[in-house]
Image (cartoon, rainbow, N blue to C red; front, side, top):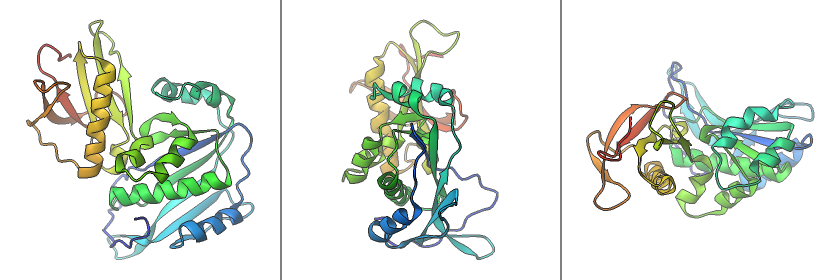
Length: 286
């Protein structure tokens, strides 16, 4: 999919493009061999070109030349993935993401040992189909892994820490939801000033690919069941787009539950567009 040529949609210079970004975390300084990376790209992504990088370069750009964006003045540039060798990092900055990381019990311990990073980021991709973007990002990310395998990965757009092996498995998966899974997270909060059982849950990761995230403020529901439902809804939006209309309902946790949908601004930071699910009485909170 990543090798199929796409037309050049126009990019506006005043738009703030959302990006998929991953910070690769290392216990020891990573040895990123750009020539080995170039050789791997020639085999695994033959239509991509490494346009910068060298023994002493801190930034390596991978140009996906079959996937072009067009500027208003008529210029075109290929979508790119940047690989940036980072400065030593402070593990404490990952405290908030670790609090919203699920499914990897050793995450805190591993991140606590890390002091170095390589940052991998999309550039000029937000006008390209999100499924193509995922293919390009996953493919390039895994080629970086092959040259310098990290100990942990901070998926910025999903606000989560994840095992590198989970991203490799996603790259090999045939199911679209499994491929996007590392870049979607469900967060859980107890809002200040609310009732003891008030809960707020939302997704992170959808806005990075041009879609609204999801949000639900509730009480009296089982959080693990709500989380599973939000994941399923998030995967549905990634596949089909923002097809949920304001005022329409979706099924809740049981066939008898109907949740009303409304596009709003998020309650939890960062401020971003979300589709809010109103559970109705008696589960609605806030």
